[in-house]
Image 1 (cartoon, chains in turn blue, brown):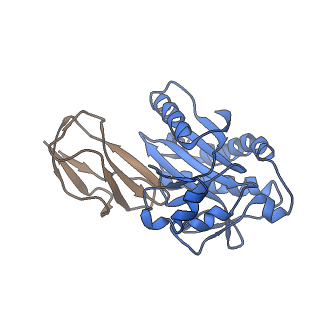
Image 2 (cartoon, rainbow over the protein chains, first blue to last red):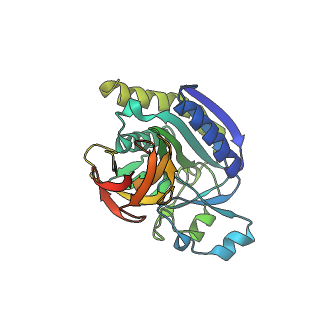
Image 3 (cartoon, rainbow over the protein chains, first blue to last red):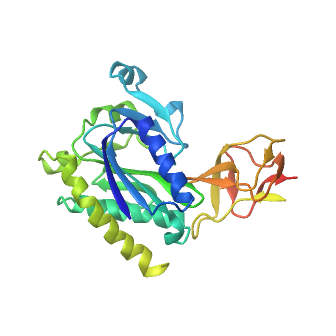
Length: 214
Length: 75
């Protein structure tokens, strides 16, 4: 498994990049590859969302934040610098071709990652993501083609959270969001979180995948 | 030949059709992407099981379908 850091990359360019990795992974030309990056401010709407996922279009426009429909599962979310985005391009054969098992794996990985910063993240049945109290700190949305998964997770490290109030996060206007920095009361760089990703992702992968299917 | 909903996860019997990527009457190659469905926080793109013509779309976008259920018909 290879981990690649792309720094801060425009959403559309990152999507093209994902698509290239996806094609290569489907063709068996590369191993599982995990892309780590940040996006400039952007709202994306997954397949379960719609126009009604946007609450304040004018506020987004004032800030120059584009709204992009995308082919992942889930509803609306917001990306910005200070939020770590992880796109694992992985073959779900290792998960017994079980999409929910992989989603559960991503949840436990997110809880591990937040736990590394002293935060106790809850996994709530039926509400995918990682929650600190009633607030969402990390989101999940994936797409699967030929049993290779793309898209992935986003973790609010130390980003501007206000634009989340302009959308219905995951289609629910009542959902509030938080970040690692807000919960710990300390500023934190995305690079500090990135440094933990590789070890925790692989550890969790081995525990989950290799204990059963491999 | 029928296009049927594949098993997507253990214990999950349903999915929602989110997008037909081809229209009725389209000529399909084997393994060409045909339909996208969603379960939980995931979408799943399904390839055509064989080469042929998409004779009929049985279940449309937004419909909830069961695993094993025919959603399209190939000629």
